[in-house]
Image (cartoon, helix red, strand yellow):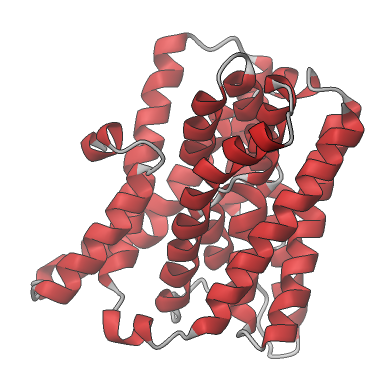
Length: 307
């Protein structure tokens, strides 16, 4: 978390997962740490996603207006469905494709981890979770410079550029970095639009859960209709919207949320072996690039129409 303050555009989550990968591959972790790592990668992860809901106040999102909210929904829906279609065309494994689709279309690493918690609750495929997060970092970091540069090239007003940044860039930290580079009121608008995309985490996870439930029924399994952590996330959104929570409480909750998710990301990172990660190949990278281009294009078209 301290390092994240010194590295604009990189969140504590990203730094934590990289640290986990490095520690696991450069040293031998004591077996005594296994229970704590398992707790972090499951329970702390879900607790962090619940607290993420306190960042979203529906009143602020409604201030964007119906056209912009439709753009946000369109970016998420088209981004996910389009990425899934691209993944199928490129021959990328289904699970990894879903994680990339959710991470790139909703809110980066947190969305990847949430989707992994739904489609891989036993964490049998941690490598694909880390692969998806690595792709989020790569493409999202490139977007920090690309969006302001393209906005200047297209002569977009600062407000329009801010809306585009919020609707297209993957991570919240990356949106803040790009919004700050755009200047003016762009940063505020970018963050509000990004939080509107964060809110889409709940319905998307519900749909994924229903799909898993249908697939599990054929195998005699009955996953929950709605994961508890998604219900908790929605409860925190309602609380933030209806109750005037004091600033210090929200700041504390934000710090705690970051700490919980960073702990979870570190634990996920320790389950990855670099040699296996390097065997992923070029297809997932091509999928990530195509998904980034798709989300950015839909977001730009939508913002221009809404404006």
